[in-house]
Length: 133
Image (cartoon, rainbow, N blue to C red; front, top):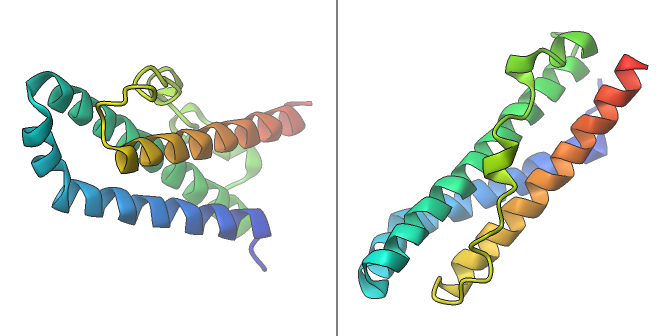
């Protein structure tokens, strides 16, 4: 079976963001946290966890969709609570995006991970609506 185009593109985008986030955390986050001071550093840590949550949730969801596509799961099985996107209240929070004390590259990661999560959440809702009706 050939993978759906949306899946490959979204998977690649998610992987690229995961690698970029990992590289930032590995090479820049500690330096930026020290440079920015305690309060901004705390915000940076919290938002880094939010980025990680968004991206890992999306990747897990994509893997479930791949399992559906290959016949390992039925669409109905994919709707089980443990296979759905979770923590939307945390992942959709954008309260820190206007915080200009955070590094601009990091804010870009925040924004792109938010848009990716929001897009996948819409896809999930479309799938839920299609399967349940």
